[in-house]
Length: 322
Image (tube, rainbow, N blue to C red; front, side):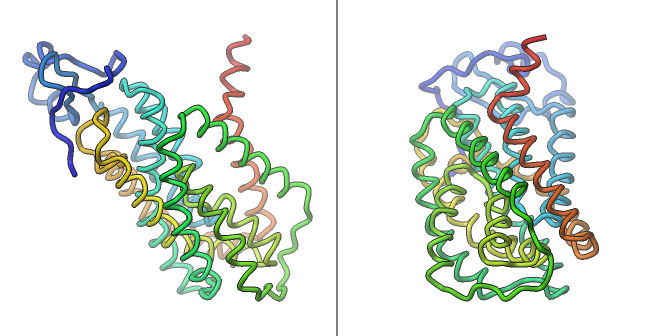
C-alpha cells in the first residue's frame, strides 16, 4: 500500500534536506524532481533525495552487488548502515530509520541474490538440497524475526547487529578453515536446527543472512568456501521473502512512515540500490570462482569486523575523543 499525505502522529525531526510547503512553492521544476516524499497536510514536510544521495545509493548498490556475488552475502552489512545514515540525515526518526533500512535491504537482497545464483549455478557451485531445505526453514523463521523486530527499539537492533557480527568474525579468525573438498554433513535435522535461529536473526536484523550462513556452512557443514558462497546466495532466495513479508505486513498501518513505502520498504531507495546490485552480482560471482577460498575468508572477516564495530558506534566514539 503506497502512503499518501497524512498528518503524522509523530513529528519528524528537522534536518537540512526537509522543506516546508511554503518553501517548496517557489522551488524550480528542476529542484522539484528530487522531491520524493510528502508528510501531512498543513506545514507539509518534504523529504528530498538530492543528486548526491541518489549517487550514494547507486554506488552502494554497485558495491554490494559485487560483494554479494563474491562472498555469498546479501550486502545488508553495507546497505543497512548507509541507508540508516541517509534516512536519519533526511529527518526520519532513528527508530523508524533503522526499521526502514532493514526492510528495504531485504527487498534489495532478493533480486541481487537471484542474479548471483544464476551465475553460480552455471558454474556448478550450488548444493541445492541444502539450499532448499535450509532456505524454507530460514524463510519461515525470518518472518517471525521481522515481526519481532518491528516491536523492538532501534538501538537494540543496531547493538544486536554489531555484537553478532563480531562473534562470527572472531570465530572465523580463530578456526582454521580448509578449502579442500570434504564430505558435507548429510543430517537433515542439523540443517533445520541451524536454519531456524539463522532465519530469526536475519529477520530481526534485516539481512540476507550470508554473513552468518557462509561461516556456518564452512565451519559446521564442512563446505568448501566457494560452495558455501554459492549455496548461501541460493538460501537467500527463500530467507529474504519471509523477512520482506514480515516487514511489509507489520508496517502497513504505521502512520509515521513516509510516502512511497510498502510497509517498511522504501521503494525509491530500493530502485536506486537494485539497479547496480543486479549487474555487479554477476561480476562478483565470476571473480569468486577464481579467487582462493582463503582470500575470500579474509575479505569477509575484515568486512564483518569493520561494519560490526561501526554499528556499535565504536568509530564514532573514537572520533569524538579527538
